[in-house]
Length: 565
Image (cartoon, rainbow, N blue to C red; front, side, top):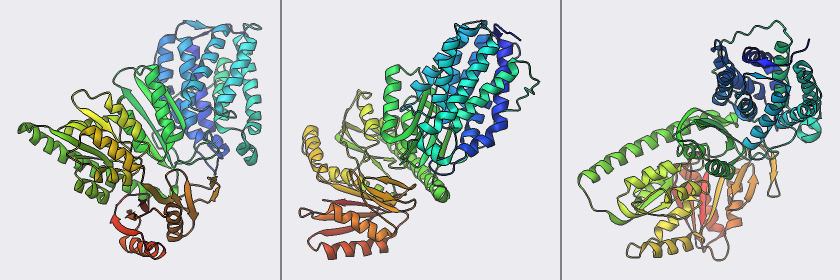
């Protein structure tokens, strides 16, 4: 049977058949996904992605090619889940960019669409990794290009393209050692092959049930997908859709991707004129969300804690922080309204600071911060949050203290967006640096003089933070096992161990030197004052010339945040 062209009706059936075939194989595909621990979400994520598009396609009665392309592209993007799902949606998006211009498509157009699909998908991934779904798609596209001048038969063309995709899929273990160790092929690539096989069945007239009951709505397992980097350091799989206020320019998209790269890995960003799909593995999901809010509103937010044994606790922490954030916002809204009503004159200088934990909040309030943004390592604010905070500070010059290296870029963006106030970002990377900056603020000095003073003083602060390991890994010359305690310094991991107190003391030893005078301990929500005092006593005994102080920081995730000056 020879077919030389495909109309929109046939292509719709092929797409639905591909979706159904993937759905039927999702559990098998899940079992293939092993990296770096047994994982099972690629098949589910890809199925949820394609089913979202299939639902839109099945709702069309007699679609034109352009209408069909829009349904596939938009539906898959909106429903995309995980790295593999987002990449699949981008393959569809690129493919649809080409086919939407035609009433019928032949081998030449199919070839062009395959090239555009791969180009679009590779562009969406910050650091493309070979041995994944991308490699399989590229191999198929290369075969399509080779065949485009040899045949006009779409059936032969598709059949040979699938054979090449299967061949490349079989080679993926040679490209990714983790696949070879596990004895499996790439799960995302396998998912793509199953989509192509289903589409081929429809092309040759196989009897298929095209009924689509609707895309799955349940959350995918909170696991780590096979496309992630070999050394995963980030514990939260975060994905969402931005409904854009205005189309994102190429420069904005590039800057957005670069920002996400600064806070995590496994980054996939895909955009059209109306929406942007984002996927990132990060320790700071709030930062990704808040950054996204600068471009528009958010929908379909999904954050999975890849440390399942701590999931319940972290969800409770997030809920508590969300409630605290809401209370803070309401209080400041009321204060701002009163201030405007009374027409109070603007003061010369004011402060916005990022904080986390009620104990830390109290410290900053006591040091004169005008507006606190609840955020930090697990819930980072955006440029929009910064702008909102600036608006609430009735001052001619507003200093922003990000207090986290992953928030500085969001703060810097606010500088260019505010016209009625001078905005100065002090690039504090930790809470202790922010506290030091405030302590060294002198009201009688000019804004520039204060900026210079604070910038100089924060360089003299060393910060250590004690948390737990997400997974087994080797980093900074240290072998780390999952659930080990880690003492993280400003530039590297300073200590690792199975005992919290011993690991913390080892970290402090790496921070204290002959010039050290003060050690400040901020204990978190997972620690307690008695343990912190015992820690302080041990430090005082070892370093009798150093003053040690203990504070209730209340921060989640980090047992201790310790500064040395």
